[in-house]
Image (tube, rainbow over all chains, first blue to last red):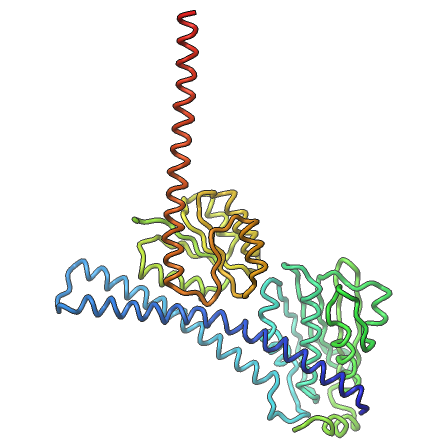
Length: 264
Length: 156
């Protein structure tokens, strides 16, 4: 692999990492906000209970206070439970997303990578509708971290192209002997003249879809490396659809090439 | 302050739940929790509400749009925006556009929230009182005008 191409991949990794970190920070902020408040509520409740129990006598008025505390604690317990589950889920999806100890080449269910992508990009997706039309996908052999990078780029681009309230549709299917992942948005679309160039390295439609050039060029390189295909269709004003097709098995030459330039 | 009504709107159930637990423990306000801004707007038609705390990022409708529409339905309700993003730009725009009373960032401080709600409810009560007085004044003025006209008709 030549050094220009390697540099492009490194840059894209950094950009992806930035999006990832921002996404994770936001995803943790909501449950953290709830737990933070609930912690304070527990502290206040404890103070109130200590005050009530101070004179060893509980008056009927104080009993009303105790009931109120019990009700608040019930709410705290419920919301903390959901918040902790959410945080565990975020950390788990991070694990499946970019596990450093994962073998470079692995046999995976692409739905896991898609779900991981949606989880870490949760913040960006908050104002959008997400529709999943998952088909039955066989396990495929690929470089999961790189394939996830494609999903991350495509979903990120789709969200960037849309106004709040837009719909992101992810459809998976088996086409001939390949698996296909289709990512559709209801965004502003891509002009016909631009569509031919979107996979060219360095191509950007300035201001229209920020950062698309690099991400898509890298996505195509990754897809090429897997012996697959990536394509795009778009109707300006209505939206775009990106399709990634990957074979069930990596081409024989892809394994060594892929492993040689990636630190273990 | 006896029972005033506070509406909490956030698409995140856990945020609504956490604020509700806090207010129910620490205040006598009646809390109306909503995870859907559209449902919340429907409720605004019917019930008197003193205070509305709304999230910024919601899929159905953003918090600024919601609070702007809430203002048309309940001008007396004090409106506060709660946001997960340290997005000062949007907050400033919102405060100007929607006539917001306050802006809180997540994670919020409960003591600050309590103070904002206490002052906001007071503001709303004063607003209603002021409106009542203005109406009374207008009615009194109307009566006086009528009286004056009758006087003039009688004596001239």
